[in-house]
Image (cartoon, rainbow, N blue to C red):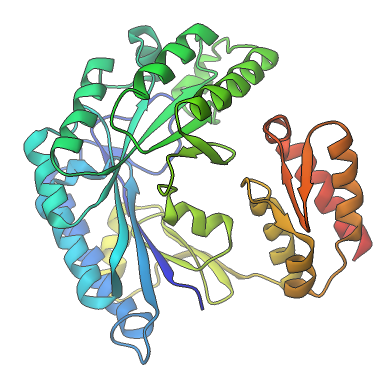
Length: 385
């Protein structure tokens, strides 16, 4: 079995962004955060008995990702306790990639030094934009200057692997503004950048405001120009939305795209392990109570049949620049790749896909319409098999 990835969800934040639909709650009391960390440690210990150090031949873990929410609002001491629980109960590799998410303005130089001392060796900052009017539209609580300072202070604290998130398609955003933002952040000491198209998620304040977004053609131009600009700056695309310098892909997220196993801890955390997908309840207090009282934490669980795994292989593999392999598909799933190849050949004629040996991948233009392409591929494969 491949090495394990571990995800820990921290559902706390300073304030809720206008576009965010992740499970997180702002301004929670210290007592709730303390109880949550205690529950996490207990849950990690219990799981370690079955798949960690407490089990016979526990599976090695080589990535940890602490996301949210804004995990750093817990403070370095509580986050250190979470890492200590993982080290105690899981076979965590000495070379593990250990990521923590942070918002500029939620950390200072002292906190960053403590996080690095605790063992976090990768940090991901939610920058999103640099222009004041765009940050205000998104409900962000930081400035562009604070973002630059946070990255500099993280590097000074000893973080050699620093990622930033940037959004495009923000209400009122122009191509020139996105270019300005990307050129600026590329001068910072970053090793990784995630570029996401803004989605208006139902129920969020931004969606309810029904803002005027840049037109689809404008967003497509933003994306394609960004891919070229980042390549020139040494940040090569390795997935639809992700770019890195040589040797700095996000190893944890790459597990998701290559169907490697991962386990999650915390309210609303998801896992894919042992042929099953499952998630925990989206309720902080119910999670705390459930761990304490040894009650079920599951919100949903399902076994994943082989046909569905085959679809996931195609759907997730085509998100990456490595794409999918016809030989690997046939070997893993005992199914013909012919119907998929026919569709991909048509895509290639339109400049949306390309092939090298037995591998197929989407081009940057193909990434823009990947949902449509993948949907057609899955439909064709279902009919053929």
